[in-house]
Amino acid sequence: MTEWLKAAQSQEKDYLNDLISLMKIPSVRDDDAATDEYPLGPRPAQALTAFLEMADQDGFKTKNIDNLVGYAECGEGDETLAILAHLDVMPAGKGWDTDPFDPVIKDGNLYGRGASDDKGPGMAAYYALKYLKDQGVKFNKRVRFIVGTDEESNWTGMHRYFEVEPAPTLGFSPDAEFPVINGEKGQVSLLLSTPATNAGDYQLESFAAGLRFNMVPREAVADVVVKDRQQVQNDFARFIDSNPISGNAEETANGLKLTVIGKAAHGMESEKGINAGTYLANFLDQYNFQAGAKSFIHFLGKYLHLNTRMESFDGAFSDPVMGELTMNAGILNFDPAKGGSINMNFRFPKGITPDQLEEVVNRVAEPLQITVKQGPAQAPHYVDPNDPIVKTLMAAYIHQTGDQNTKPEVVGGGTYGRLMKRGVAFGALMPNTPNTMHQANEFQPVDDLIKSMAIYMEAINNLVTD
Image 1 (cartoon, one colour):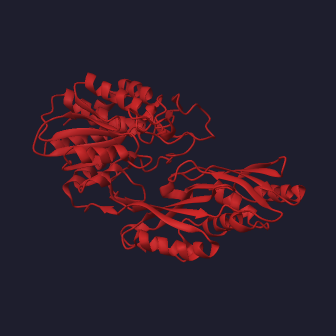
Image 2 (image 1 turned 30 degrees about the vertical axis):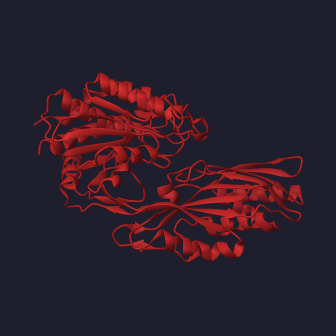
């Protein structure tokens, strides 16, 4: 029997070299820099090109589809096993102790944007496939390692792949956690708009929090006109001291600039973050703001603050298999010329629909003259735990870790696995490793990444030689 961990350890040096070279590419989607040649901006395409050149040199058949998505292929057969990863990353944001795009290894941990989501795990799965190919394993399936370039936004690349290429028979995405994610909640964003109006002694000149809908805002900044600067500064200092946040108040020509620093987290687990935007709005809500500014502040400060389960809307919901409905207030902005915009991102189990969620939010929003528009939605996804792909992946994980008590899980995150009827997510975050996806100082233990490579080796081998 092959000693998969030793095989993975033999690949560590080359794996880290290739991984770090990819992590140095700041492959954040940039619509402002988009062109016909680079529809998502040049950096995601740069990462895609770098990966495909690597795979081509490693002896895979490769294809770049419109600088949006690509694949490396080996094996042959009537069925296609797909491994779906992504090369784009979240914006770095602030709060890093190291350069997010100059990866470093400290105390056995690899730090940098993409270490955990998803370059580290993706490359571990790629190296597992490469090792099997190089060892001459006879594949009874075609295997395509497919890489997208905007998983952190709207999946343009992977949707393009499924438009122009045959659908895989089965597959997994190394973009979550172990053991196996056989269920993913549905997703939808509700996009709220508030009037662009101010009135009275307290006025909101600007408010900005959040980088992406699926990321808890770490920082929030508001410029306000206030009646008594010193009183507001004193109130703000007390507010900062009595809450799990930091911040400061600066005097401006017209009033104050207030900054709150919280903690970023993945939007699927928004309760693990500290939403700087709703904290700032909660503070401002005590003052006599009026008109559209008041609607914006009051909605955030009363209804969205510390409310990831929609209790303040009387909208809490849970399914016995798929768990709770969750919400992340991810992008929060106000401009007196344009009005306010609020993105509420939901992860919902089966049993409730986006239309029902819109109705729940409307009951609160409409009296505040806030309009609600529903964004694109993804339905909940579930693969039976007895499906052979789930059982095969679980067996590989258990064999490599000795974890006999683990079971397949349902999560709020959305991965490419849901694009296939028999698709799941599989690693690479270990159960006892902190989840730093979408956060500053994102990291993965190097030993975990090598262990995950061994798990992927065994799992892929068993899927293509069964």
